[in-house]
Length: 199
Image (cartoon, rainbow, N blue to C red):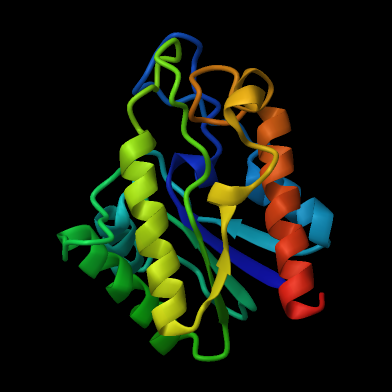
């Protein structure tokens, strides 16, 4: 089984740096790493820090994403903003185009959309301030999954990530995960894949 992961820093595996923001601290133990172990699968990680739908789409069009023999494409975007449930934004349009390109280029692949995960509401964390755009993106992604009849993993509702667990799961900045957080994100995504597709 081959899984392709598209996304931003939460896919690439940025752990954040305590008290800082905007400085990447990418580690190999990201959610695709743990997902590969959990599912005994080949998982290709095309996540990049700072990506929105537009940058992910450009990277895809530049032929930097390998879909060869893929069984699943997991798309988790929206944390970096630009998506809206109520307005037609450029990031909405780019997100939809990315999905269509994936469908056209790999017609047998199962496309799975993920809502962005929990972002802190606590101003003590250096990455406080993302919650509203994460909320907008979450509503948008749910709507797209419903309208396009695509599989949805509602990471925003993941019970492992809450205001009470930030010290453990998102310990550096309240947004990016630590090792334990990425491990649990992989478990949540993997468990959903197993249930939805009888893996």
